[in-house]
Each structure stands twice: as C-alpha cells, then as structure tokens.
Length: 259
Image (cartoon, helix red, strand yellow):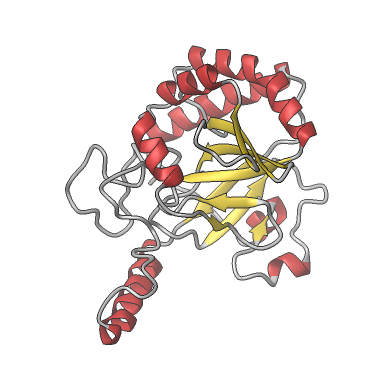
C-alpha cells in the first residue's frame, strides 16, 4: 500500500476475521490472491453490480456504505456460525471485504465464492423461497437469455432435482441449520438459488465451440478458456489432476455443486 499513488487508496476490512473465514472454507491465501488479481474481472450480467473473477471462482459484489455497516454487524455472528458448522454451509461464503478509493470516490466490494460452477454453464436458474405468493417470474424476466425463475415456474415446469440419498440428507441438514441461523439473526429476505446444468446440452455446446475455434487456429483476444483451466488460483484442479468429463466437477472448487 505504501507504493500506491496518492489518488488511489485501498482498505481491507477485518483482515484477520476474513483470513480465518478463508481458512475455515479451505481457501488458500495465495490461490485466493491469484484468482482475485491475476486478470481483470468481468461483469456478471447487465444491471447488476456483480463481477466475476477471470477464473469464475469468485464473485465481487459492489456494496453501499450502509451494506458495509450491515455486514460488519453480522460478521461476528457469521464467523461464529462458520466455526461451529466447520465451514459446512449453503450460505454465501464471505472471503473478504474492501474499500477502493480513486480520486476520493469510494467503492466497496464484498468477495464471495461463486455459487455456480466455474466450468459448467448454468442452463436453468431458480430463486426459491418455498412460497407461491407472488413467486412467478415476470414476462420481462422470462424473456432474458438466462432468466431467474421462481417457485411457481418451478412447479409449472414440473421440475424435479434427483440427488443421491446421502447427498440429500447432507443438503437438508445444512439447509435446516442455515435457516435456523438466519432466524436467530432476525433475517427474513433470503432464498435458495438453484442452478441446473444439463450434461448432454453442455456436451453439445462444447463440441460446437470447439468446431468454431478450429478455423481460427487458437485463442482470440487472449482470454483463454471462459470457464477457467489455469493450474493456479482457485480455478485450478487443486486436488484432482485427472481430466474432468462431461458434467463432472471438482468439489474442492465448485463447493456448492451436487450431481
């Protein structure tokens, strides 16, 4: 920070607390820094103050100063809960919070693990609350390329998500425990974000992308694989060096994923 120009300032909030949270979530500090800083992040959709790290493992959410105060107020309880549950939670995994000041204009950023896979694209997305009252996506939302659908849409499409019995039990245990924590904190506006990757569709899309790339003879624009295959950072295959097949994921990287 001593080498920063005078018009640029950077502040890390509660560094020891967030460092301990990263440790509880199994995130190595060096991998975290590489994922966060190696390449410029990209916007995660239009109209949202969300950024994706270049390897798609981290989400950076822009906060207001009021939001920062709210996170501060929750942080000690959140940290205690993460310690008690040994990092086994479906809640957002907070990894760092920062203030970036350029020419006295402040931007606040909260860094979290990406809820979705860093390499498997999401084909359908639902925001579920367990209620049918005013829980259908608007026509405008449904017209988007990847709309965020809701409970009524889930039922109307007769969607079902099948997981193994052991995974189902672990998932429900986490969900119930997380909801109890949110109730204790008197938090009410929460939901379950569900993303679905269709394996066969994903295979077909990957084949089409490879066919399109062949005439060009390489990587255009220097962006590389949009789903991140760098051996460094959180997007690398940290604990498994075998190639991943269709629909497969590394649970140490895609920490929320179920198959």
